View 1 (cartoon, rainbow, N blue to C red):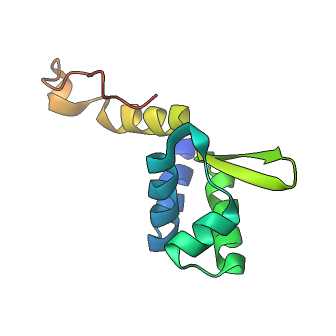
View 2 (cartoon, rainbow, N blue to C red):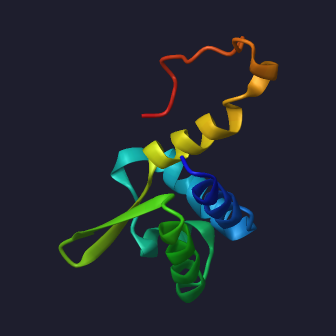
Length: 107
């Protein structure tokens, strides 16, 4: 992952509503959520949610797919994992890190 992509992703997440939306999508997994469901569950006005979804999509952290008359939003797990890998790439002062990947890792 390039540094400018990391900065864009972190900037998108550095806002409470966007972080809340992204976390809801991560919890939901591959099924994703419609904007209406998210707005109701998170108690966010639809126009506000739309703005934040646009920002997350531009940062590459969220994908969208049209399904009939609905748009389904999903967390971009590959991008999220790339961001986490970038942030932890040089942990433990360059020594082999004690943290091991587990079966619980994100898809």
